Length: 206
Image (cartoon, rainbow, N blue to C red; front, top):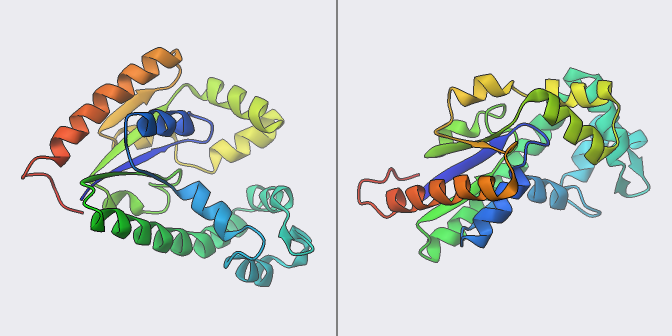
């Protein structure tokens, strides 16, 4: 199976690109969606998070995501601790889903992973697609989307690798500052190219 790692900084349009890919027939596995399932009421990650961070990031049996976000973006060690809890759980779940698709005969799958590089999972995929736009626009979108101050948005952006570093290791760069129709053109062209590679007998196996 040929694997595409779709990544990019926060608020750079990964969900838009993933939606376009689904419309073109791609099988997309979303790491953030898996993470939300793992941290939903009754999720397997909750006891581990409670044991490490305490009850102050919970409201009863429900994870207080706002409180947890405030904690981890103010304290790098807390953020790294949460990553150490969540990443193995997310990737184990993701692997199971990839195996199901493989058993169905799928030749190509897209893994939407915001922290692809930061988690070291970039070495596990066959090619990397990066959503990118200027930092000023990224901050503007993030502030508008999540109702954050500029300082809060900057802290979230700063917790990830800078786009310039990611671009050196990505095969496909999707400029999401473009209008939606132009973004769609970029995604369609890259997807068609990836399908040809996945169907080739020389495609690199995962």
